[in-house]
Amino acid sequence: MSFDVDIEARRGDFTITAAFQVAPGLTALFGPSGAGKTSILNMIAGVVTPSQGRIAVDGHVLFDSAAKVDLKPNHRRVGYIFQDARLFPHMSVEANLLYGHKLTDGAARYAAPDHVIELLGIAELLDRRPASLSGGEQQRVAIGRAILSSPRLLLMDEPLASLDDARKQEILPYIERLRDDVKIPILYVTHARAEVDRLAGAVITLEKGRVASVK
Amino acid sequence: MGALLFEMSPAEWEAVSLSLKVGLWSTLLSLPLGFCLAYVLARVHFPLKSLLSGFVYMPLVLPPVVTGLILLLLFGTRGPIGGFLQDTLGIVIAFKWEGAALAAAIMGLPLMVRAMRLSIEAVDQRLEVAARTLGAGWWWSFLTVTLPLSLPGIIAGAILSFAKSFGEFGATITFVSNIPGETRTLPIAIYSFLQAPGGEGPAIRLAVLSVAVSMVAIIGSEWMERRIVNRAKA
Image (cartoon, rainbow over all chains, first blue to last red; front, side, top):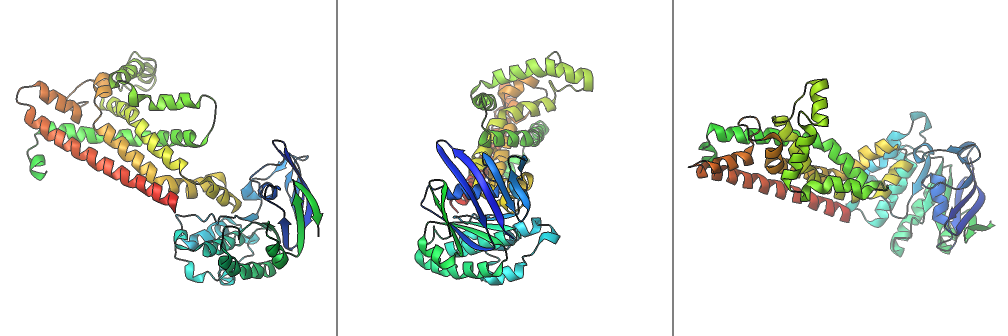
């Protein structure tokens, strides 16, 4: 499994041009704020439409301007973990976790709830409401929710940025376990060098909307 | 309160039950339309949007007698819509309780739409984006995220619309007149009692009932609106 991105998008007088390939494992999309990192994730997820280009995961075309393919976000099977956990406030932790799982076709499911709950250490939280969780717990539930929709690829948009140092240290081991457990490509946006060094197998550096280097 | 209800004459009961019927039907009638209007006003951006909200909110500031007159011109048996309904479906609503329900629905709509619009605006659209990336189509995300999160506002809007409909006077009496048992709703009955000698007693009894219904409605809708604010904080 791997995925290919080759996109161009204009935002006013700011242009994002990015072409790269992501292999299974965790790849960091690294760069200063305003470099266009989150815009690229939004285009991959189908939340924002690129001006032109092509996005494909493992041979499945998600977007292709030449062929006029533009799958809706719900048909892309791209998991997205946001900086803010975005848990559904009116549902229990368990209902949050199973939201995408229930919407995934039986044959396409590879993530089992019991396994993911154990992996992320959230078994104690299942009956709670999101508002009663700490920031770190919320983010772990959000990670579980995304994985349980059995995505072909996982996007993480600065998942630690809104947490204090203690919480970051609490979550990092879980992200490492996740990285080693799932067989899908993970694209991890960050501007923190420490997270890149600790988590990433490959690094794509973005500057002013352009890929500056791939390592 | 118990003694008050015990003393009510058949004519007073008739007015109260008619007001209940008109209020319930007008609320049910305006719920789907009100929600669609609230959703469009909260979420969709289009030219002339202020014109649409102008039409919706107009009955709030227009003299009710003018709203009633417009309804009479449109839905009267010689009006374009009323004439059409009579000719094709044999339906006449002018001077009928159904007409009272229509007048009440129009008068209650601004209150309903306002409450619903605020609650829809309070729903964090980023949650809907999250739902979509988890595999939910637009409709599923609407049903499982947007609708339940805006439910307090929908209930508040329905309560306010009911209370307004229960006591609507000006547009109703202009459009469907004052026919005992058909269009003489609670406020119109109060007015009629006051026109006759010795009618103060019944009028005051109905007025007290009216105050109670309005009070319960306001407290109920405020309570729902507080839930919206609390949820937005959480």
